[in-house]
Length: 444
Image (cartoon, rainbow, N blue to C red):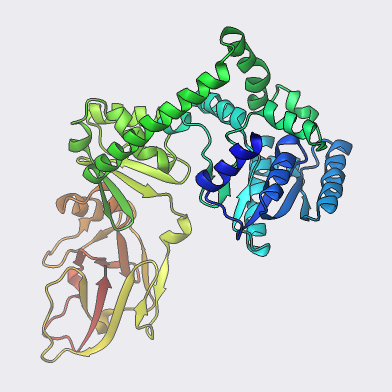
C-alpha cells in the first residue's frame, strides 16, 4: 500500500522517472531511511547526504556512524559534512532551527551540482504538512501558508507527503529497516515539537479523525489559494508598474478595493513585508501622509502623493563618489554616460535634450565628480542668473521622493554643473567665446 502511494506521488506529483538521479537528505530517522529504501525499490539512481550538526554530542556522531553503515550495506554513495551550528547561529543572530536549515540547504545545493543530481528528496510526510499549517498560522500568513507542504518545489521533491508518520514507522518495522530515534524530537522547547507533541494530540482527543479532516481542509485551502492567486495575478497587472529599478503601486487603484489591506498583503508579501507593516501602510494611505517609509529586510516602500514606490535597499557604497578623468570616454557605473570632450565649437549645434549635457570644455576641472545630491546643494540652472537650492529645484520639476533620492550630480571642483538627466548649470554653458565643447550623453 505504502509503496503504491509513494510510487504514485513520485511520478505524478514530483515528476521523477528512472533515468534521473536523486540526492536524499538522510538524517537516519525513520522518515529519511524509509525514503531511501522506497526510492531504491522504485529503481531510482540515488546518492545520500548526511548533516552532522554537532548539537547532541555522541548522539550526533552515532547518527553519522549509523547512516554510513546503512549506505555501505545498500551500496549508496554517501556525502557527510559536520557543522558548528551553534557558532553559525550566534554569528547570524538566528535560532538553531534556522541555522541548521540554512546550513543544510546551502550544502545540498552545492552537492546537487557536484553529484550531478536532478532532484533533492526530503522525508517530509503527511504529519509534517499539518504541523506546517499550524506553524504558519501561529507566525501569521496568507492563504498560501495554510496549504501545507508542496510535493515539489523546483528541484526539491517530497514524495512521502501521502504517507503518515505512523505508516512510515510501521513500514520500517515490517520490512526490518533499522532507524535512529532523535530524542530532541520530544523536546517541546522547539515550536514545531510543541505543536507535534502537545497541541495536535489535543485536537485528536476532540476529533479522532483529525488527520483526515486536516488533509481535506488543506486540500480545500489549496484550491481556494489557486483561485485567489489567479485573481491576485490579474490585480497585480492593474496595480503595478515597473519603472527602471523601482515598482510603482497606484494609490488610486489600491483604494478602489473593498479590502485594500488584503490586496496589498498579497502584492507585498513576496518582497518580505509582513501583515503588521502592510497594516501601517494602509493606515498611512488613509491619512494621506506623504514621504513615510516602510521596510522589509531587502526592500523599502516610500508613500508618495500618487504611488507606493517599492525599491530594493541598496548599499551606501553605490552612492559614490565616482570620478571622471580627462582620458575617460564613457562611464558605466552608477549610470551610463558617454563622453565627448574635445568637440570644435565652430558650427556646433546645441541639442535641446535633458539627457545631453553640453559645456564649455575649457571651464571644466578634472577629475569631475559624480555623487548623490544632499541637502544644502545649490546650482545655477541654465537660463537663470541666481542660485537655487536643489531641494527647491526638485519641487519645481515635481520629482517624486524616490526620484529625488536617485538623482545624481556632476561636479567640477565644488560646483554642481549638471543635475544628471534634468538641467545643466548656467555658469558652464556654451557661449560665443567657447572654443571646445564637452558633450556628455546619459543613456537611460
